[in-house]
Image (cartoon, rainbow, N blue to C red; front, side, top):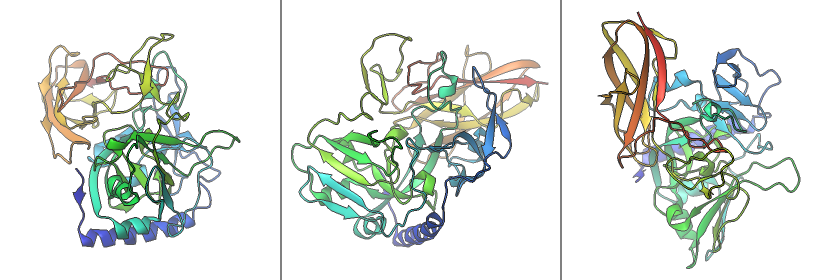
Length: 413
């Protein structure tokens, strides 16, 4: 459950938002004409090995440029070695439609709550701050297609490496409290959320995602205005966004503009057929061309990574060598992280570091002694529910939910 914020931190939230509002109003374009600021190696099956780096987007540092419009910016993987929480200016960006507001006045931007409720309500982010209890929760935001570039056979979509994810401490209010203020009527089935990005083609559907009403009112789903002690950047959903801990980021609506309570199942394009997976969670696996029942993507699955050693790194032989990284349990906490130095034939435990909550990244580390020569390090996470990363990758036409055990080839010398 999110924990309550003190009055002093509430005042800080308001001050940060006002400061960010000034930045947002001054952002006249999402990117400058010159985007490239060097390149980075991102070796994906089928290429391309080199990707452009850019620092041209407002409130963002050096990012891997996947697409300019709509903005798709990937976090360079080395950033994840800096700590359990992802720096806000390096936090990945993913929008669906190209018409993204380039400036927002938080005093005027309103979120409407309507539909199967007793009363329609409108809130600015400052209204939310004044009228509801503030909460904080640490949670991983991960794109459904994170690591899509590794799928074989290759699939269409943003060819992400492993950097379409980030972890933050989110501050805001519970969606439950906002819905309760509107008075959810008996017979409500789902809560649909819509953001502010718009398609450039007339008639194309606005992005709308729905949660079951009980999920939306579970006390953990949040409307957040702050991440890692900063106001949301424009590109990460300023002035307020949905936080759905343990679920993929397609549900984490940015620039939250409309919350509708539905008394009928949501059949809009973004629930079906978009963002559907084979109905065999947690694998979400099928063969190319296979006919299989599908369902909307939902809960995340466990993942783990080595962060201090890149593929091809040279490490010391016959002496203790530090190996560290991050893990997350998906829709629950991390139970254990194990490391293998022999291709998965045997596994050794690692030491888990500070637990920031069941939805957060958790750092881990261990020491290994390697014989000389080429070695492959493998890492796997088991979550609190006993779900463990698989040794073989899944495949589906959306390129969703990859969580295979990761391998890092090194040379011990």
